[in-house]
Length: 189
Image (cartoon, rainbow, N blue to C red; front, side):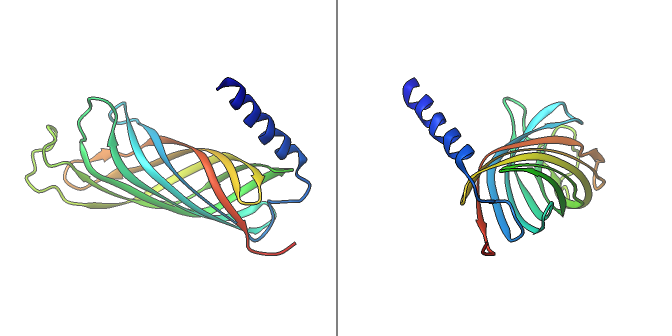
C-alpha cells in the first residue's frame, strides 16, 4: 500500500511540474465542496459545516467569489446549542500567482441565519426566532492547479458578527477548509 501511495504522489508531482500552459487566467471558473471544521470562540468548541464555493476570475490577480456554509452540528459530546447557523459570503479575492500556485487573500461581507436550539439550557424561550445577522469575514488560502479540471485547496476564514435576537451571542469563529476542487476555463487561450 505504501508503494502505491508513493507512486501516486510521484505521478502527481511529476504532472504538476511538467505543466507548461497557464491554467490560472481570466475566465477560470473554480468550485469547491467540503466539510469544514471551525473553532467557535464564544463556547470554545468546534462546529462543522458543509462548505461550498464558486469563484470566477475577472482579470489576472482578481476573482469574484461566493461562498456558503451549511451548519451540520457540533463536535463530540457537546449538545447543539444552535438549531441553525448557516451563512453566505460574497466579494473579491486578490491573488499572487506563481506558475500553477495561487495564494490569495480577501474581505467578504455576508449574512448568517442563526437560531437557538429549542432545548438549550441557556435558552428559556419557548419559540426562539430565526435571525438574519450581518457578518464580516477575512479569508486567505492557497490553490494548487495541477490539471485543467482539478486543483487542491486549503482556506482559512475568520468571520465575526452577532446573533442579537432572543439572547445575544457573539458569532466569531475561524473555519478551515481543504480538499480537491474542480475548475474549468471558460475562455480559450
